[in-house]
Image (cartoon, rainbow, N blue to C red; front, top):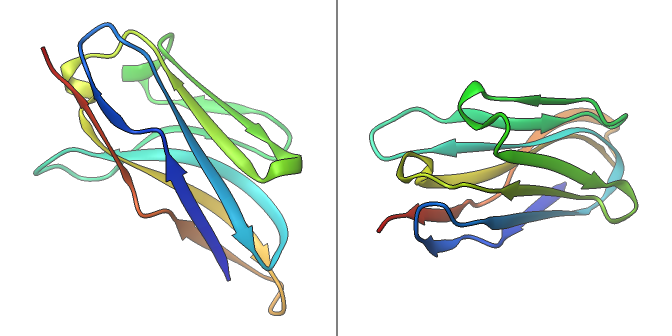
Length: 121
């Protein structure tokens, strides 16, 4: 099994910045893609940003130029730097990882518990 623990959420005013972190732990053999998704009240969970093990990145159009995803493979950690935050960025942010774990060596998808980000004046 693989566990994902997020940190860094909070309440801030529009235009502010915030950095989310997500650390993976457990019986990890290899982590492929990692990323961030978010879910606002009454809406579906949407992709925000993903990063492959080799470093290639994808972003939702709504966050391009404002958010940056990165990862530290040695620490099994993915980050999301969020700048120029807007009220519409308010959501619960979830970490996601596609990982292979011992002893099954099967590729599975894992989710963190979520961290709240609220942007409001």
